[in-house]
Amino acid sequence: MLKRAVVSFSFIFIMSFLNAQNWVQPNATWHYDYWTIGSEGFVKIEHVGDSLIQNKTTMVLQSTWFDFQMNQFGTWFLSGINVGDTNYVYAEGDTVFYLQNNQFQKLFDFSKSIGDSYSIGVTDGGEFCNTTSTAVVSNVGVDNLGYQFLTLSSPPTSDLRIEYGNYNSRFGGGSFLFPQRYYNCDSMVIIDFPIFTFKCFQDDGMFFNPSGEDCEYLLTHLGMEEINEWNLGVYPNPATEQLIVESDFNVLEMKLIDTKGNLLWKDNQKISKSVDVSFLNPGMYFLVILGTDSEICSYRFVKN
Image (cartoon, rainbow, N blue to C red):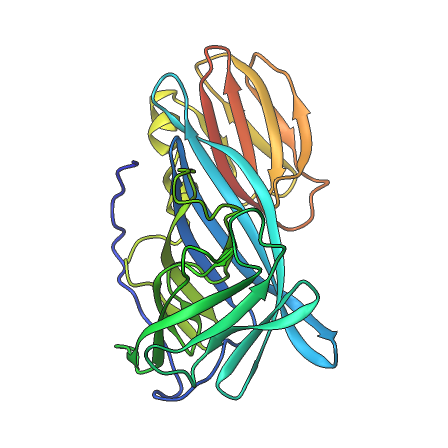
């Protein structure tokens, strides 16, 4: 696992009132770290717009996966940025619904009591799983933010499973926001599935970061030691017309990638050079640099 230094700021949160359900506000963003054998990273879930579906005004939530792996030299690098699921969510009364198989299913039902269960979706079930997946309530209460919470999990026979954790009525949280499909309910078969951990949440009315660590730690800190060791210089940041790249090692390849993982530009070059970024729209991007000795560094920058 990567060693991480905790940044100096601690978590803060802003709320207009406590002890009431007030589902997420515009510009909501969740971060969840994940880990599997051989890789780790984080999932960013963003409110990217609204949509009218089946006469319901829903929030459109887009997930993006940032994956990091270690090369043969023991250096962690950004190995991929992949667009994940798009989910459609709305809240009504005590319940938050999400779209699954073109039908709205319960995501969180805060009217439930300990021992209750409810359906979170229907699938084909596969060889060993039930066709109807459920969430089971093992505890209820009020968390330290003042919001009602449910402790939820799914039985091993559920094809869709909500990760075990505490989910509150303000932003969910828990171990992961949406149920995951595991495609395997056979207890005799061991499959490496991601292990998720809630990192932070923010929207127009709240910022909650219990760890006090940068929500995108891997992006903001990964490669900094390598940049120093390689005497690599990339500037300016933010950039308007060009990025200047200066290095003591031979650059084999450079790529520009957006936050959705799309390749925007690639070039082979073995000397220091500048990179034209004038064609990019304003926003955040990544310059990925590969050295002739398999050095890999990902540099994040902002295009004005």
